[in-house]
Amino acid sequence: MDSNSVFPRISLLVFLFICAAYNAVNAVNVFNIRDNNGIPDGKTDNSQALLSTWEKACKVDGGTVLVPSGIYYVKSALLQGPCIGQTIFSVMGTLMASASPLTQESWIEFNQVDGLSITGNGVFDGQGSSTWAHNGNHNAKASSTCTASLKLKFVRNSSIEGITSKNSEMFHLHVNNCDGIVISHMSILAPIDSPNTDGIHVSSSNNVRISNVNIATGDDCISLGPGTTNIDISGITCGPGHGISIGSLGKYPDEKDVAGITVTNCTLSNTLNGVRIKTWAPSPPSIVSNVTFQDILLKNADNPVIIDQQYCPSNSCSHQGDSRVQIKDVKFVNIHGSSSIPDAVNVVCSKSMPCQGIEFSGLNIIMNGNGQPTTATCSNVNADFLGNTVPTHCS
Ligand SMILES: *[C@@H]1O[C@H](CO)[C@@H](O)[C@H](O)[C@H]1NC(C)=O
Ligand SMILES: *[C@@H]1O[C@H](CO)[C@@H](O)[C@H](O)[C@H]1NC(C)=O
Ligand SMILES: *[C@@H]1O[C@H](CO)[C@@H](O)[C@H](O)[C@H]1NC(C)=O
Image (cartoon, rainbow, N blue to C red; front, side):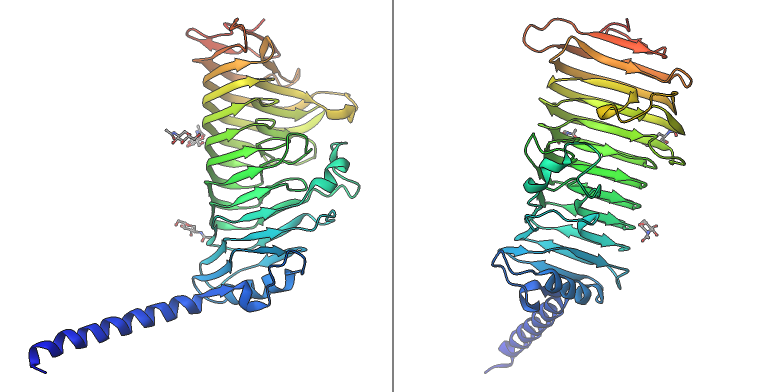
C-alpha cells in the first residue's frame, strides 16, 4: 500500500462514520407506532400505542411519530404537549376511527403543542356515516357534542400538510384557540349528504393561513367562528359543500370580534352557497370587520353571495329583536361565474346595526345555463357597486 491511497481510505471511513452517526441520530428521533405495539389490522385499538409513541417523540427535539402504511384503528387519542421542541406527526398509513359515534369533542386532538408538524400522505378516516343520520337537526347528534375528526387546541406555530381527512362525524378539522397555523395541500372528503361535516372550522384563533386545499363535503368547506383574526384563505377548491362562511356568529353572549379575513383565488363548484357571512337574530353585540373576498370563481352556485343577519336554521330562535353584530368594511372583488338562481347577491343586514362599507367591484355573476344577468337584493345597507358589475345594483 502506498501512502497516496491511505488518505482517501481514511476520509472514506470518516465519511461513513459520519453517515452512520447521522442516521443513528435520525433513527433515535423517529418513533414508529409499529415498535410501540401498534397493530395495523383495522380492528385492534391502537389508542394506547399511539399515545405512548407520541409521549416518546414529545420528549425529544425533532421527535417524529411515524404511522407507516396499514390501517390503524384508534378509538380516540388526546396528544398532549408541551413537548421539548419541534414535533413531527407523520402519517403514511390510515388512522381509522370507530364506526360508532363518539361522545367527546374530538377523535384525535393535539393540545398545547408548539412547533407541531402534521405531515404525510396518509388518511384520517372518521367513519362518520353511522352518525350522520343524527346530525340532521342541526344542533348536533343526541349528545349535542360536535365531534371533530382532528382538533388542534392551544397549538401554536404549527402546520398541517399533505394528509387527507375523510368521512368525519362532524367537523373534519377544528382549529380552536390556536395562533400561527399553516394548513396546505390537504384533501377533505365526505359525501354531499353528510350533515355538519364542515371541512375546516376555525374558532378563537389568530394568524391562520389555509391554502391549496381540496374540499368536497356536506357542509361549509371552511367556516370561521367567533374570535377569528388575521385569517388568510387561498387556493381552495370547494364542492360539493356549502361554500366559505364567516359564522354563524352571535349565538352566545360575549363572543369575540372577527377581523382581518381574506379569501382569495378560490373555486366553488355546485355549492349550496358561495361566500357568506351569517349572524343569528337576535344576537348580542360583536363586530365583523376588514373582510375581503377576492378572485372567486363560482360554478353553478346556489346562493353565490350572502350576508344574512337573520340566520335561524330550523326555526330555532325567537325572532324577538335584531342581530347586534356590526358588519363593516367588507369588500367583494372580482367575484365571477354562474349562479343557479336569478337573485345571486343577497345582503340582509340588521335593522338596528345596518352594515357599513359593503363594496362590490369586478362583480360578474350570470345565470347558469342561459347566461342572463343576475340580480341583487339588499336591506339595511347602502352597498357600493363600483364600475361595471353584474348585477348592477341592489333592488
Ligand atoms: C412563533 O414563531 C414566531 C416567529 O418565528 C416567534 O416570534 C414566536 O415566539 C413563536 N411563538 C411560539 C409560541 O413558539
Ligand atoms: C390559485 O389556486 C389554485 C388551486 O385552486 C392554485 O393551483 C394556484 O397556484 C393559485 N394561484 C395563485 C396565484 O395563488
Ligand atoms: C385588514 O386585514 C389584513 C389581514 O387580512 C391586515 O393586513 C390589515 O392590516 C387589516 N387592515 C386594517 C385597517 O385593520
